[in-house]
Image 1 (cartoon, rainbow, N blue to C red):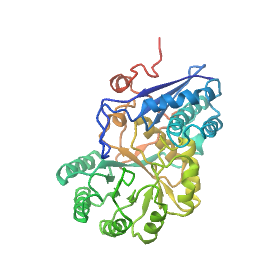
Image 2 (image 1 turned 45 degrees about the vertical axis):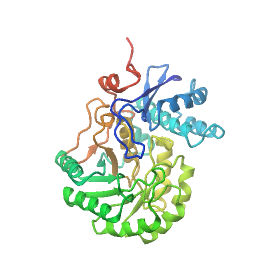
Image 3 (image 1 turned 135 degrees about the horizontal axis):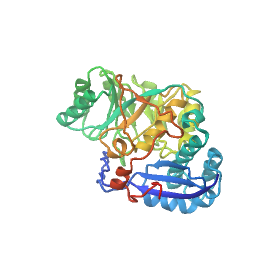
Image 4 (image 1 turned 180 degrees about the vertical axis):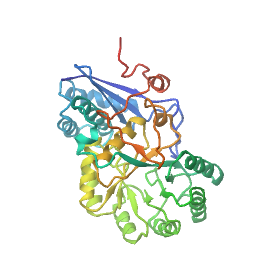
Length: 379
C-alpha cells in the first residue's frame, strides 16, 4: 500500500468563539481536515487546529516525504516530517500540519489491521471516558443557563474559561466561579484563565491569590494561569497552589514538553493532539508525564475528528480519564456520522471500529467544508 494523495478541507460557517481578544467570526477557518488517500482505496482523516492556507503551505514541503510511502509505518513517517522541518518552521505550521497527517495515518493503520487506533497505540485501558463540557465564561445569567442546560444533557464535568477572568478584578473572578459552582452543584468544575491569549495580564501574585480562592470552590484544576513560556512562574505557582495546576496546550512536539515535565510544573499536562504532533507525540508525552506522576488530559478545542483522536488516546493511556468536549460547536456535534451520545453516567464510548472508528457526515462537509466533496468516494 502506498500514499497517493493528500487533500485538505477547511471548516467555515460555524466557527465558534474562542474567547480571544481578536474574536473569531463564523467564517474564519481555524480548523482544517486532512485526508490521506492510498492506492488501495483506504483513506485516513486527520484534523489540524490551524488555518487551511497554512496547512496547504506546509503540505507543499511535506508531501514529497509522504507520497509513495507505506502509510502503516506511522511513526517513521511522522518523525521524518519532524526531522525535515528544522529549517522551515519546526514547531509551527509544519508541526500543526504533521499533527493532522499523523492522526490520518493512525486512522489508516487501524483500518488496514482491523483494530481501533488506540489498541495500536498501546492497548485499551478503558472502553469509555468522561468528557468535560468546555464553555467560555460569560455574565452569570447566560453562563449559568448554558451550564444548567448541559447538566440536563447529562454532562457531569465542566470547565469554564477565558472572558474577563484575570483581566478585570478579583471580585469578578470569584463571582464568576461562584455562579458556575451554583449552577452545576457538586459536579467536577475546572477553571481556565486562558493565559495563552496575547498579552495576558495575569501575574504570578494574582495566580497565587486566585488558586487559594479556587480551592474554596473545590475546583479540580487551574488551567493556563500564566503565560505559556513562564516556566519559572509555573514552578513557583504549583509549589504553593492548593489546587492542581495544568497547562501545555500551545506547546508543540514532545521535546518542548520535557522542561515543564522534568521540573514538574504541572499536575496535569494538556497537549493538543491536533497541534502538538498528532497521536504519536501525545502518546509519548503521556508516557513521559506518567513516569513523573503527571496526568495527561488532552486539550480538545477542535473538531469531531480531533475528539475521535482524543478518545483513542484516552483508551491507550492509563491515567487519561477525562477529555475535553467543546460544546456548542457544529464542527464537533455534527461532523461525525451518527453524532456523539453520552451514556446514563455522562460518559462517551470509545469507538472500537478500525482506525479512529468514525466516519464523516457528508451533509456536514457539504455545509461547512471549503471543499464539499472532501474525502467522499467518487462514483
